[in-house]
Length: 431
Image (cartoon, rainbow, N blue to C red; front, side, top):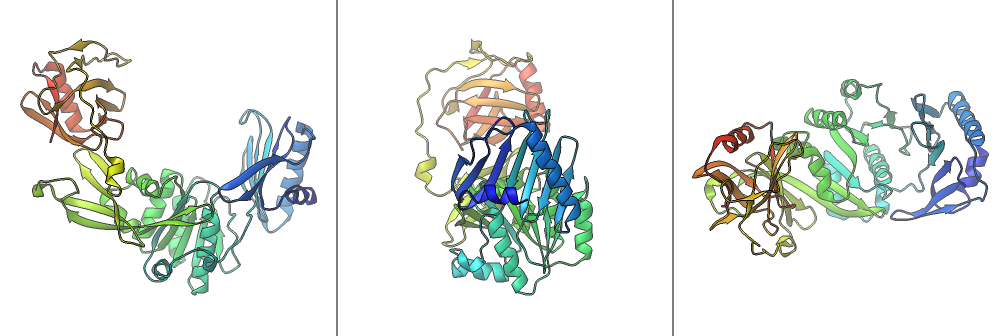
């Protein structure tokens, strides 16, 4: 593999090497958040060269102890060769023969990060449901490796779940890959080994979320690496997969990595309270409060409202307010059950918008949802869907100005039945 080493050494801090058929070889180099993609040769690669390189890689992976073939299929291979993660794709799975080789650019200790003493104390004493979030290439796995070694230095028993196994860890830590098509079986095995912490790199599929949740609820300290563009996105990816009431028990700390360093830290707490913006004390309910861990400032509230689970931003409220526009007209639209679900015929008999009501711009019926669209400027407002004087359901308008209702819900089915036969108009009334 001398040839690969030479390719990586053309630039300093080279993260990945990209070899594609009918293209010159290119490398991605730089620092987290400041990557640059540049060619390293004018030679155009042909398929014969890439096939020969693939054969060499597979032979080395078979012979060497510190090498694993993580996934070996007819049209794709994933190999972990020392500290190289190699992905080989072959047509027709990809449109051209391609080899992508990634290696870690840097290894860091936790002490090298800009971590406040308060956060370090939490990691030592309390944090056991940790998510390390961030965009690709910003240093999530590097931070996860540093945190793993930090726990190992505290005499903790650490295991990892990785596919591929590319975290740079020492021999104190056993790295596991998933069993074929059965990550839950691996979780059963790990529970028998009584680890203090399990590092899950990376959480992608529904089964991954289920395993993380099950092991955390079983009392194992969990550290999960997850892709997210904003810190709150990491939590929201769990919302659709587990019950809202379990989230604060599963996740207690979210560490967001940006440009290779810790940018934001969130903490979660379950409370019973009236959600912010609600005036009626009778609407108190379980609310997950998401705070900035360092300054304790509330950032978001998550709670169930009617058929929906909503995430309401609390910080910089002026940023989230929308200037309300006056209705252009009071027309509403015919509810059609045609396959294409077009609502293009204005009428006054079926939908109204008078007084405290909002104009209905459009109703869209998809296979999974019934969507009622209102005019812009009412995002996050609480509303009631009514037919005549009867309240059908409560909801909150989403950021797109839509009230999205799952057609699996009994309340939505009831609303559809009323729409079909009721003479009274459908209205959207502000609460």
